[in-house]
Image (cartoon, rainbow, N blue to C red):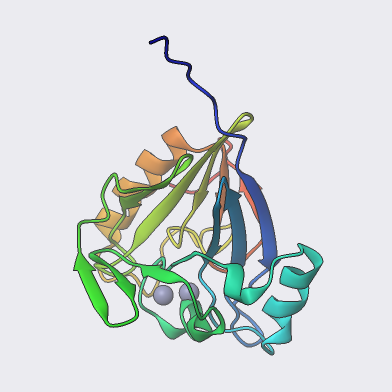
Length: 194
Ligand SMILES: [Zn+2]
Ligand SMILES: [Zn+2]
């Protein structure tokens, strides 16, 4: 019987909230729609819950239709609003959590949906992961390796600076755009701090 390969439609990316690190602290929160999956990255600290819910409404996605949530790492500025999504399964560096089920798995090369995969990028913390999304224009990396486009060149909070710089260099080779932990998306350029 002849088989036909059908390409799944391109992943759609939307920043729900653009984070910052002063004054106050808020994480960048993003939505990735990929086939049947609707994924929120880092539903952490924001001024109020509506800061996430309103842009989600504008995208015509109800919170109970979010299928997956990804934590770039375990700090509260990236996890605090995780409970907004009652049906989601949750992904971090070593497991998937859903209801009372803790399914252990390494994040490295985990394919979450047709165009979304995870890679381990420890440095800021030992638990840091980066979400890679392939689009027709290139690959996006959702990551805390950078707080914003300026870096900072050396993350003052990193537990392992050497590892952080190694993974920055690796991700900058893969990705065309970075969606950082506390700022607007930016394109990888020769000026990007590695
Ligand atoms: Zn952190
Ligand atoms: Zn952070």
